[in-house]
Length: 79
Image (cartoon, rainbow, N blue to C red):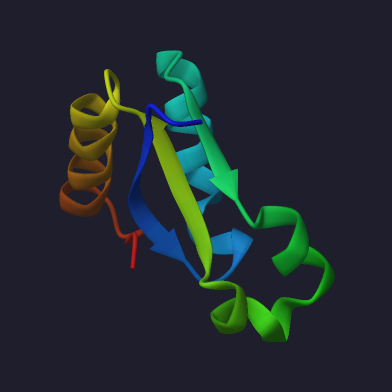
């Protein structure tokens, strides 16, 4: 995990459901850190620091481009 970097933070899993599918389709190396803890204790999301999208540094620019494209071309916004 040392070559992974955080590029986005979410409060709830519903905020990144579509993004998760897009990243998977592109075959990027990523992980949503704290996802299980927030699923179990959703009101403690801020205490855990939110759900962090961590992407391999080689895939980071492509993942950021996907997030920007999703925000620009859709009514679904990554907050």
